[in-house]
Image (cartoon, rainbow, N blue to C red; front, side, top):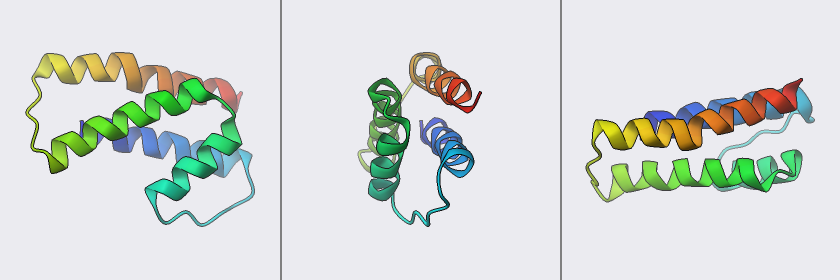
Length: 90
């Protein structure tokens, strides 16, 4: 879950680097705010938020996930997030 979230963070940062004025982003809340403004796409942010929430549950709440859970999160949240970013970069 953590790897899926950080993959999304890197996709999001790649988008911001390509499409916005360079900005130093040093926290997740700052990224969230900048990303939401830059994309204007609430669905993309929803995917990002779900990945972030599950990552935090894994790290801080020690929630155990099955391989099926991980595949489902990847397919329902990470892949649509990635595709949305790639579409915006065209």
